[in-house]
Structure formats: C-alpha cells, structure tokens
Image (cartoon, rainbow, N blue to C red; front, top):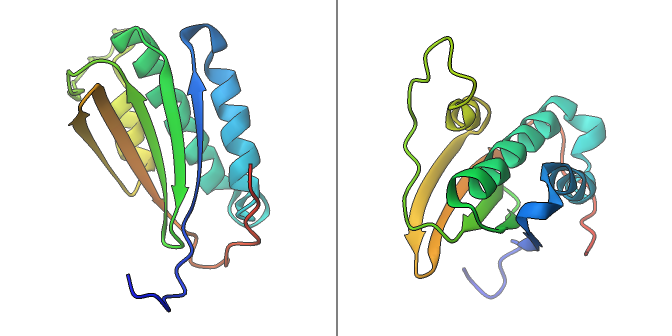
Length: 145
C-alpha cells in the first residue's frame, strides 16, 4: 500500500474462553459492527455477520475444545471475521442429512458470507469469513475499542 493511500484498516480482537459462551461473542461483535453504521443501513448484513460469529465461535469451542480468539478487521472493502482456535485440523463442510442435530455451521457461514477460508497457523487454525460493505450505504465513523 502506498504511503498516501486513503485506506485505513481497523481491527478489534477478543479472547473467548469456552466458559464465556457465544452470546458474549455476538454482543461484542454487534458493538463493533455498529461503529461501521451498518446496524441502521444494513441490518440483514449485521444479522449474517452475527450468525457467522455464532457458528465459528461454537465450532472453536465444541470441535477444538479451546478458547476462541475472535478478530474483526475492517479494510474499507470487507469486514473479515476471523476465529482462531488451538486445533490444527481444518474444518470440513459436510452433509449432515435431514435428521442430524448439528453439522450445519460451515454451510451457514458459506451461505451468509461473501467468501470464507480456513488455514493452519503455528498454534492451531483460523477460519475467516468476509462480508463486503453494503453498496447502498457508506460506512459511518469508526470507533475504537
């Protein structure tokens, strides 16, 4: 990126122990997404982001049995929702069938995100879902936190 580039990336991170529950992740995410102005201009997009956060944090807690590190990164084009856990095993989307009580998390993420990817890291793996900015609404002021 050039020195005079107008791009201003911003990010937030939070560690979520298994005992914290997914509700904490959703509420924390909702607060930060609100700083982008999307709560008023793109409430369906916010719902999709919160659904992805729920699924990714649940996967980290249930399948990896570890704390989840939730990272939100806004680069003026895409909100990257990343969840890191301590398992080196990459998630594999599966067909849970009609009667399985679970197994649909990545199918949901795939349905609501513009794209997603999983990759190994030195101490586990990260799964990132990208949500493009709403075209009809420019993002608002970005706060810190």
